[in-house]
Amino acid sequence: MISIIQAAGWPIWPLILCSIAALALIIERLSSLRPVRVAPATLLDEVLTITRQSLPNEEVIRKLADNSVLGSVLAAGIRAASQDHVRDETQLRQSFETAGRVAVHRLERYLNALGTIASAAPLLGLFGTVVGMIEIFGAQSPTSGTNPEQLAHGISVALYNTAFGLIIAIPSLMFYRYFRGRVDEFVLQLEMAAERLLPNLLRHAA
Image (cartoon, rainbow, N blue to C red; front, side):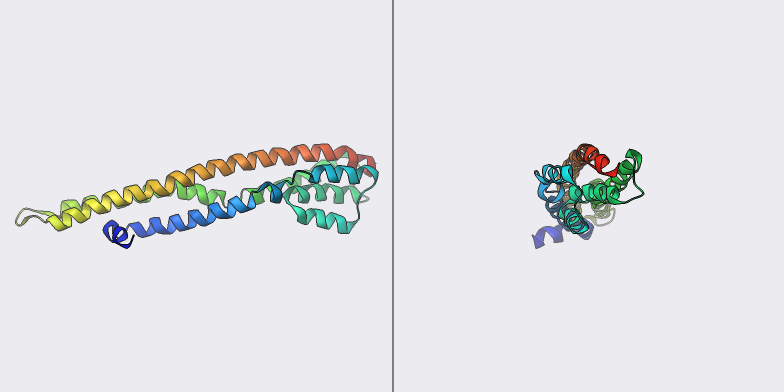
């Protein structure tokens, strides 16, 4: 591996940093976007069962908010319904929408950074290719002829950086698209859950 880095030259270092950052972001998002941390399967049914009879107390609402992203959205609606000044559907929907925007921000965290790496890695690889081409042209001299060692080094710099840029960009782009799809799916689940809970809250807020 060290020999490859040496052959690729100094332009490979930004790509190595990008690969480390991309790997860290992918692992973090794989952990954070698990269904158990975003929208547990049984959570909505449990909340619907509880709120049919009465609204839970503040301690239960706090635990619900800490449970998951879905729990934080549902807790925001329940907390709003518990307040005296909230009496109509518009106010409850507004509380859900505010909590939903916060939830979406949490779900989309670091995705822009991963998308930037996916876009920038091929450009960094191209930059390394240009550096390698410059070394190739520099290896040719009208007086001394071609320097084989410098020529070989320029070719290695060009090829290794191109390859590294693609190796980083392809998985980063694939995971970025995958996470985007997961976020869209979770956002739909949050919206549907809020719609299902709303009638129960209106009954208690009226």
